[in-house]
Length: 182
Ligand code: HEC
Image 1 (cartoon, rainbow, N blue to C red):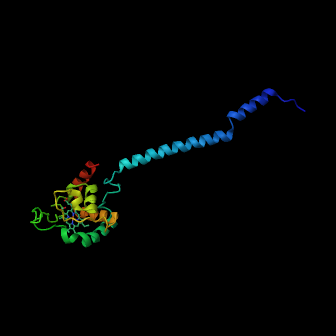
Image 2 (image 1 turned 30 degrees about the vertical axis):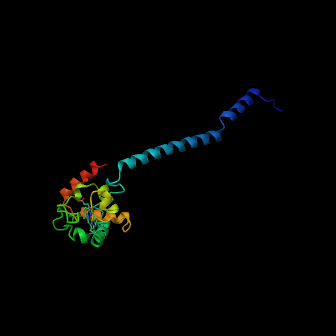
Image 3 (image 1 turned 90 degrees about the horizontal axis):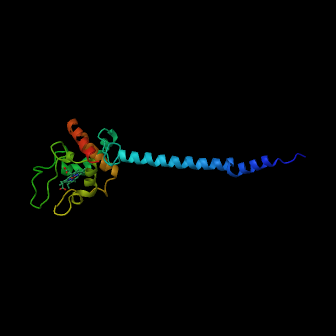
């Protein structure tokens, strides 16, 4: 029988206490997991900040280059918007002149109107919540709220269609307005 080498024994005991390979592995896995979560949160926040609501890629961006969206928007527009804003986006006659009842006629959505002066996020809000909610008290709006009758995608589609009808120069200026609003 070989005598127990106490020094050897002592070393292996202390190694077992603090350097248990299983425990070390677990600790490493936890650290890697935590680091991955921090990186993911950081990247997520960056993505979110880089793509705010109405910016290209953002959730409220009405992309006039997206053909499928524009096609959907054309039919949404014809069905829900053309009666007031005109089949050709021309708006109602004398759209700047207030009516006797205090409301405004529907403005054109082509480049002669001021739809393109507003960023996507605001246009979305006007269509979703209606002109009254957007303008507040002291103003009487005829622009209905479509939040209950249209999906978010249909609202975005109607805007994408409107934008697809603008000349390139107006679209460029609107892209700047979109960017500045972020
Ligand atoms: C019953 C008539 C009517 C219908 C239908 C209608 N609108 Fe309007 N819309 C208006 C009027 C009137 C205004 C002017 C602002 C106001 O009075 O609130 C307006 C304003 C707007 C504006 C703001 C334009 C700007 O230059 O500030 C947008 C955007 C708009 N409408 C989009 C739409 C879309 C998209 C649809 C269809 C989904 C639609 N509207 C359907 C009457 C209408």
